[in-house]
Length: 129
Image (cartoon, rainbow, N blue to C red; front, side, top):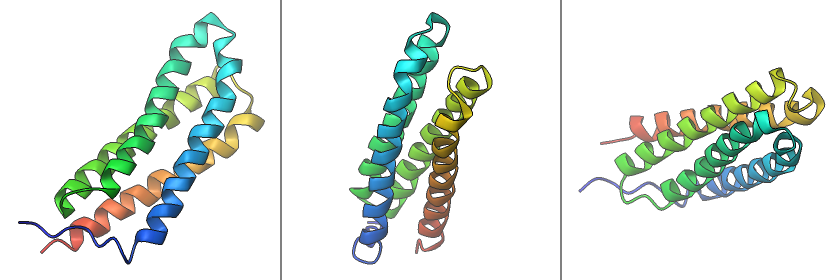
């Protein structure tokens, strides 16, 4: 059986990431009304919402992973979802669906979260026996 991820050493980091993901989800929700007002952006808003919430949910799944490999797999899925959310947010921004002032902080936060999750998966994979 594979090693379980070390939950004691990284638990504070994991909590911080989980909180930041929740904040990113809340920030995304704040942008949705502006997008949903225009029929052209409704699909985009749905895709953005699904991706950002899926990223958070998959990270939570990773925190309860049954093995190091399971953790890496779920963190990679969370990363992919956040990349998708980042994409939809950039499309909304470039298409004037949301203002840069409203979207830029969330774009930056998603960039940081993606980098953190990539590093987390890489670190966990490198520590595999």
